[in-house]
Amino acid sequence: MLNASPILIVGTAATARAALDQMMALPSNHKIVAGIVLVDPGDTGLGARPPVPILGGIDDIPDICDQLGIKAALVSLPGVMTEAMARIRAVLRRCGVAERFLPTISDVLTDTASRQMLVGSKLDMAALIGREPRSLDESGVRALLTGKRVLITGAGGSIGSELARRCASMGPATLIMMERAENALFEIDRQIAAQFPGVERRAVLHDVVDADATLRRLVAIRPDVVFHAAAHKHVPMMEDHPAAAVNNNLFGTKSIADASVAVGVERFVMVSTDKAVNPTSVMGATKRLAELYVRSLNHSRPAPAGQGSRFRLVRFGNVLGSACSVLPIWSNQLAEGGPVTVTHPAMTRYFMSIPEAAALVIQAGAIQGSAADVFVLDMGEPVRIRDLAARFIRSHGLEPKWEDPQGLMDGRGETEVVPDGVPSVRVLFTGARPGEKLHEELAYSKEELQSTPIPGILAWSGEVPDPAAITRMIADMSSVRHAEAQDVVLSALRANVPEMMPTATSRADAA
Image 1: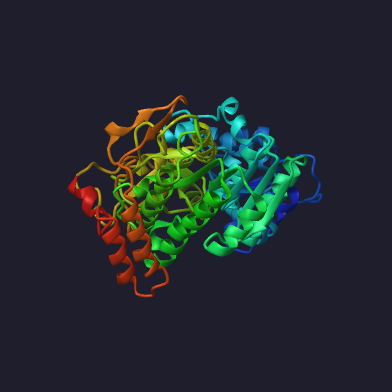
Image 2 (image 1 turned 90 degrees about the horizontal axis):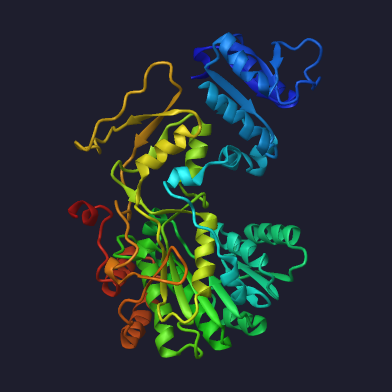
């Protein structure tokens, strides 16, 4: 806790004054403020006689902490000062000083505060995931994108917006960003306009689930390349809304894929997930059905000569830093003083960064002559969520203090004891959520994964979807896509995805 020993307030004159005022409004707590460190020591905004001493600048923090026995610091900076934030955090980490962050009112109102800890800390993704992230081979993708009309669905999302930035850098004839969320579309359109002013672009406010309107849109746009990133992705939420998952993930995909067939796109790439392999969740099962439909199009309508499969899909592991993923959640939890929540001590995931994920999508679309239609990134060994949390917490100068109220460790190891005086944060094991597996897979059979001309990208063909089965599947799911009764939707999903398990942990625990 901050009131256990004297603390520093670190910020600008204005933010330090606001933080000090809040501290002094608390009973007796103002007595433990050792002083203020200013980003600009020459800032006179605190006046000639501040209530507590101004001790110096950022470079003085090590000496200040050593002389005064500082164990914790309250940092308050505007969200735009990311470089100063990273510098302050690095200094505090070296000094072994726990940091607590106080956002400004302006940043709270604009939602900048929810991203500050993640952005300001400049996390080392390689250290977090235990391998070097793979980069985009630009020479191999320019033929796919340069001078082409490129359409991205879900362009306002984490992956879609990164795809938009990557594609814009390749000189497309036109970049079309399609998104149903108005604010997200406005923001990515603003970013592309600022970063790539020479790129012709269109922002299209549209929901791809509307099949008739989607066809009209594509007839007007005539895209050469389509990246389909629009989807519902949150596993526990889709357990409660299975019809919405069917409608968006399956029929939204069918809508944009059918329209792409009608206008003769050169390449269609769907963003999928490792959760579509032996799915235990509604989200995974609906993405599995979407995969089957997209793959079926290659066999009902062959690609132009020499191009290989025209319709492709890419399976991701978990994408670090994407909206509502673990890093933003943990950042907010750290900012609030904890606890940090981890679902299960044994849970593992394949992880990749947002740039890696976007690069995989583009490169999979650019591979020429391959008959494969499923591509995955060689992400090495899966990472325990528990280990990822520990690395994340330690990157912020703290030690994890594990708590296991449900007894989930179950003899798998003891929780570590944090020595007294070492800055720490509680980490609480909460248990797997509805629909979650303990361990994910990237392919139904690892033996069927084959190398591609691009290092680190693997291809999987698998069994060719049966056209009659696809027709039955679409008919079955169409009858429940708007159903209110969850059991009706789940029954149809299990009938069409027979490998789907009914619970999150039964399959993983049995393995």
